[in-house]
Length: 235
Length: 182
Length: 213
Image (cartoon, rainbow over all chains, first blue to last red; front, side):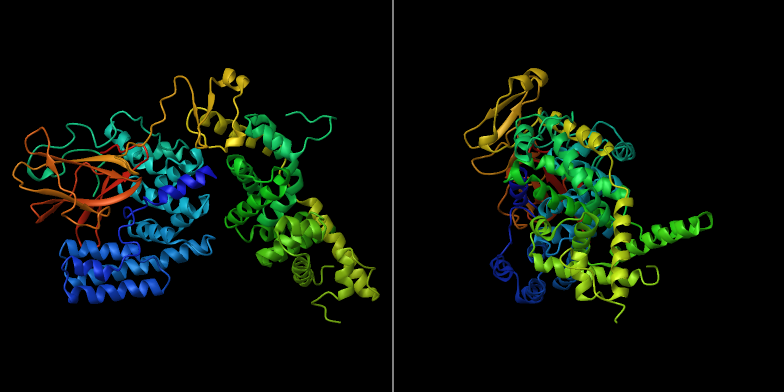
C-alpha cells in the first residue's frame, strides 16, 4: 500500500511537469499570453475534441502553450496537435489491449509520448502488463521512452524498466535515466550497458554524491552552451 | 521449510510471521496454495510452463504486497485474485496451436486409444480456450478443481447463480467440441 | 434432442445437485463427459515443488535488499527483531508518521529529497553565455513561460545558474537567451523532438536528484 501511495505521489510529477495545464482553459491561458484568435481558435477546437473523445487534454494544452511560446505558426501547431491526438488514440487502444479496461489519462499520455519517441506497440503493451498498477505503468512508459531517447536500445530500455518494477517496488523508476547518464559519464558505451541489462543486471542507481545539477566543469566553455564532446548526449 | 505432523498453522499466523521478518515462513503459504490453485493456473493459462511462471510471479507479488492483505485469515482468496491477474497476463504469451500440433505430430506413434485420449484432451483444451474469461475461470474452478459453487463465489466475488450460468454455458461449449469423440 | 446443449437434468447432475438424467443417451453422455473432464484435470501438468524453491529464493533476495534500503510498513506491524538484527545487522525503526525505514550500519544514509519548503527535488541548471543579457528557463514545468524562471550570474563570469524545486518526473525545457533564442541544455539526459521541427532538452528528475550527461 505504501508503495502504491508513493507511486501515486510520483504521478503528480509525471510530465509534462506539475500539472501546468491540467484542467485549465487553454484558450484563456493563450489569450492571457497574447495569442491571437487565429491561433487560439483551431487549437482550442482540437483540445476540445480530444476531451470529448475521452482523451487526456493536458498534453495537448501544454503543447499548444509551447507552440505559442516558441511563436510557431498556427497551422503547424494544429498539425502537431492532430498528430499527438492520433497517438493518444493509439496509446489508449494499446493499453486496453494490454488489459487495462479504462486506462487513466496519465497512462494514455505516457503511451502517446512513448510512441512519439519510437517505442513500438508491443513494447508499450509489455510495459503496461508488467506494471503493478496503471500509474506505475505510466511512469514505466515515460522512463523507457527517456532511456531510448538517451540512446539505449529499446529492448534494453524496456528490460531495464521491467527490472526496476521488481526492484524495491519500482520506486526507483525515475532514477534510471540518471543511472544511465552516470554509466555513460564513466565511459561505458550504450551497447555495453544494453548487454548488461539484457543479461539481467538492470541499471544500478548511482549514489547521492555528485547529484543535484550536474558536475562542475561539465558545461563546455563558449557562447550558447552548444553541445560539446560528451558521451551520453543524444539527438 | 519443513512439513511435519504438527497441526497446520493458519494463514493469518503465517502472514504475521512473514511480516515480522520470518521470510522462510512464506514457504508454508507457497506450498499450500501451489497445491490448492495449481490446476486453476494451468487451466487458465492453457500451458504448464506459463502457469508455473504466473504462479511464481503471483507469489512474489503477494510477498511484496503482503502488508496490504487486510484479512490475513483470507490470504487464499486475496492471493487467488493476484494469481488470476497473472494468469490473464501470462496467457497472452501463449501460442495458440501448440497442442494441436503435438497431437498431429505424435499421432503416427500412438495406439488408437492413446490417440483418442490425446484428441479428447486437445478438444477440451480448445474448448476451454474458446470460452470467455469468466466462463473459463468458472469452468476451471468447478471441473478442474472440483470446487463447490459456494467456494467459487467466495473466491471470485460473484453470485452463485451467476457462476452456475457460466459453468452451464461453458459445458455446452465443451460438449460441442467433444461431439463425435464422446 | 438438441445435441448442442445439455438438458437441465444433465446440468443439475453435472453440478452434483441432481440424479442422473432420465434419458439413457443423455445419461451416458453426461457420464462420459464427467469422466473425460476428470481425466483431463488429472493429467494436467501442475506446477511442482520446484516452484516453492524458486519463489523462496526470490523473496529471500528481496527481503535482503529491503534490509539495506527503504521499507514501508503499517504501524501495528512494526517490530524490532534482535535475531534479525544480529543476522543481517539491520534495525527496523518506527517513525511517528507510520512510515518505517530500515537503516543498516554501513548502508548509505537514506536520502531525503531536498526541498525549499515545498515538495520537490532541488535541481540546478547552469548555462554558459558570456554575451547574453538575460537568460531564462522555459519548459513543461512552467507552461513554457520564458519570464517566470530567470537565471542569475554565478560566481564564474558568463556562467548563469538557476535552481528549481521539481517533483520527480520527466521535464522538457530550453534556455531562452535574451527572449529570442531557444537553446538546448547540453547536459540534459537527452534531446527530443518538439513536434515543431525543433528539439527540446529532456531531464528526468529522480527522488534522489539528477545525474546529468
